[in-house]
Length: 190
Image 1: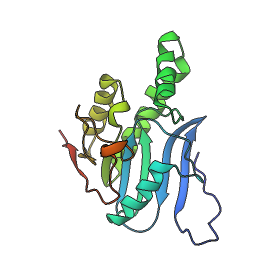
Image 2: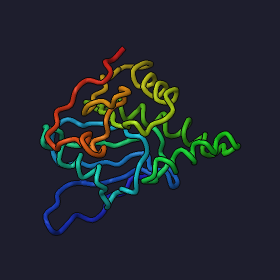
Image 3: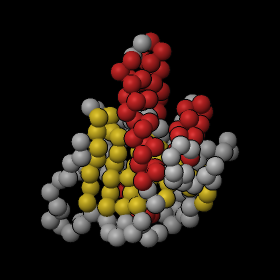
Image 4: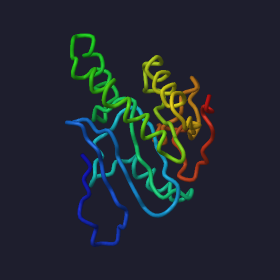
């Protein structure tokens, strides 16, 4: 379900929305003008929603218009809303204990949504950083995006970690991205 809050009477003309499936956030959408639409794929959503931005979405709210984009849609490897990567791992690991609803949300709701949104975008950015722990799941998501029906988009990033993972713009210390950091190809289409 997508929701649009009332326009900001103080001059913020950004259109904000979010798509949820139950308590899981499938998309965070920010529209600020004409221009290409970006899709950003992170690890797991924080508490940002249709009316609240977090530090990461504020960074994107600056970066994308600065680089000529008219909007972005943020999706995630895992749709479970928490600002704690450890909590996200705990939720995902509950699948092994028989949490079929978690498995279904991940495989049958979130995965097709991420793939569809990536294929609908003009440019796809990835930024799950070193916190994404399941390389098999990452490979599956990337393969689903870059195979099957066209288009097969290139995946862009703002740098890579020492292990080759696409950096998150809010990484700590020297890894934190500058607001004008250029993007680069992470994985070219197959």
